[in-house]
Amino acid sequence: MTKSGMKVGFIGLGIMGAPMALNLMKAGHMMFVQTRSKVPAELVDGGATLCTSAEEVAKRADVIITMLPDTSNVEDVLFGARGVAVGLKPALGGNGQPKLVIDMSSISPMATKKMAERIHALGGEYLDAPVSGGEVGAKAASLTIMVGGLDSSFERARPLLEALGKNITHVGGHGDGQTTKVANQIIVALNIEAVAEALLFASKAGADPAKVRQALMGGFAASRILEVHGERMVKRSFNPGFRIALHQKDLGLALQGAREMGLSLPHTASAAQLMQVCAAHGLAGLDHSALCRSLEIMAGHEIAAGDVTISA
Amino acid sequence: MTKSGMKVGFIGLGIMGAPMALNLMKAGHMMFVQTRSKVPAELVDGGATLCTSAEEVAKRADVIITMLPDTSNVEDVLFGARGVAVGLKPALGGNGQPKLVIDMSSISPMATKKMAERIHALGGEYLDAPVSGGEVGAKAASLTIMVGGLDSSFERARPLLEALGKNITHVGGHGDGQTTKVANQIIVALNIEAVAEALLFASKAGADPAKVRQALMGGFAASRILEVHGERMVKRSFNPGFRIALHQKDLGLALQGAREMGLSLPHTASAAQLMQVCAAHGLAGLDHSALCRSLEIMAGHEIAAGDVTISA
Image (cartoon, rainbow over all chains, first blue to last red; front, side, top):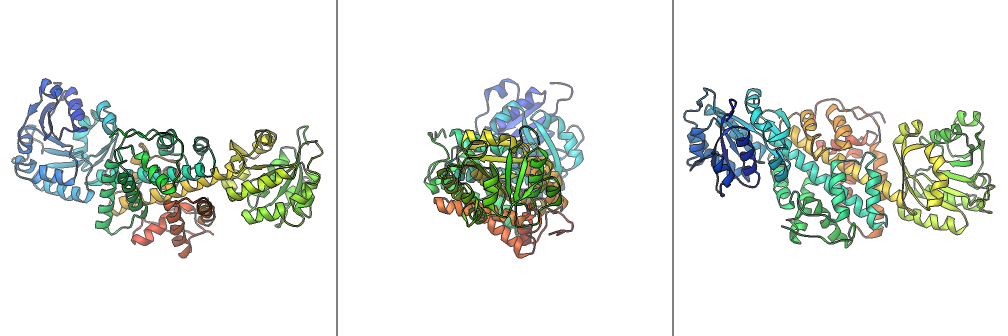
């Protein structure tokens, strides 16, 4: 442990959480972990302390990170029986500072605002810090991290976040990190759908979709999605990557939030339906670039020839 | 006139055609022009020959360029009374090569294939070479040009196209240039709509859309549209640029083509309807980034505060 090491709790050691906790341990932090899944041997061997509840994690650590599947899981872990909130008595850590909860799950921005208020009311601090970059980014400590919360909390968290990711932005107040993540997932889904419509039109009209994609890269149609996911559509390379099933969850957050706010997101809603077309055909385990399959199925025509492999 | 100067006909001297013809004249070509609008003094002063019909242009020039508003205009100019086809007798030019028709309008890919066949059947050659880059690109000779047709025709046309644009791609056979242009306009429209949904969600959720846009630029949501049009939405800078009314025409080509081919383009169809929401509110003269106004009107909430200026 280095001099700068903190007492860090980590709750949720799934596909994303396990490598993230490991990266924090490697950065010299004292780890207190709790999870429903199996704790990786590497964490135990490295000296991480296994806790039996979120309450215990919150009692023993000064910063408590959560990395969980969905909004309800975070609510349970924070405010359920033997949850983090119970462990925040007292809310001041051994370092004399308020205990800091950092939720790195991708969950509802609206629920996040309420949970942040409750943690602050208990004397703790809260940051929402969802990530993008997937399992690869989690392992390589190259995640993009979008953060909402107080400036002072963000500065305290910075050394931890820098051990986990590269592109770290403090967007604004409580919930703004989650809001940014939702906005990101809206654009990514709709840009994939846009590229699919364009390449399908081109292919059906008899043009070479690979050449069309290349020509479009030079102009206003240029995007990371045209570059990466457009190439996947042309090469029929649909191994994930980021699975349609996960993107469906994120669009669900967008549509639920939009409904709560009284906001119409017509193309997000339609993209969610097109993902269900994919799911109906057993394709939800494919990379989200395979969203093009929904349009192809509807058209009875494929952007390019080639097998569609499923490795779900 | 330089040694490499060709006898170039130019039909259609509108907002785009006039500066393009001027650039060709400046490059040392002998110009034969015909238009329904007024011929710019600079062309006359520079020695361009005014013709009274498309037929005369085709008789006197070796390469005939058309730059017209829509499919029916090109069909009329090529195959109507006193049209280009009549002037293609004989179809060999003074240089001993088949006369070359280059249609640089943005029109139907399907109609283009038929017209190309008819011109070739008459002994001429045909390229479709639609552009993007607008009036600014036309004046600066920096247009993006997407070309369909024979390799040999493309090589003959290259010196002319290089006097008009910078990013010139020979995509494939007849019609593939128009197909690529349609694909481009589909992606641009849908990426604008995607950015609008994301920034509207973020703004309504209380986040700063400028900061959210900045955070998103680093990841998979990155695109030219997020960069340029996203900034316009945040800064409420809707002076064209490329007008919604023109983009409506292009989406019409996409939807008409899709219908002819038996292809469903759900988001293109929806974007066309959202553009009509803009038109219903007198906004069709604004830059196409103002497509966000349709969603804002539906939501009763704006991405950012600020006036929406109309300079139609």
